Image (cartoon, rainbow, N blue to C red):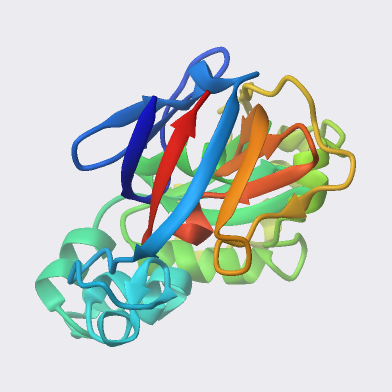
Length: 264
């Protein structure tokens, strides 16, 4: 079977295990069905996810010009505390910013390699946790806009990490944590503006990934350096494909690459 298209992050469906899909313009692949099969990935060229021109990708699947112009790549995406739509202040496109920022957001704890704090729109639960490779997660607060979520995350980052160690996550080098206990311990650091939105009666969500074998020493596949690769797929976790030879491929970080995929 041969497939061709521009890479975007894998779509997911909650299940036991989680189901993964690669979506192309004229095709889609249920990646779970490729486990234990030999797969060839061949890089063809770059295509910006916004303007769709054949241009080198700068960041997040966008070319240089689009990255610095479109609201989907604005600074508040990565730094939610910089959101200003609740003040009716425009960054790049106020209509878009109101649509995204002025909706319920979740501040959460997730355990991927260790406990970390993060922010996501409520509609992205549990997708965000899946994308980070978290095997367990819990909501801390549910606030009405992105700004409140951002300042809450900033306050909690002084007491818990906001980073994931991707190598440990992929090696499954982790331990179970009592996230309810963590949530209760961190309550005292929530800003006063967000304290009314604290969630105190929720439980952990547990996630199971489709992995047959975890890599002992994961080595990342970079299509710019290695435009052709072939290997046997052994697992999918976060946004990574895990191969038998310890090669791991981060689909999310290769958004905007047009590839051909052959399944043998």
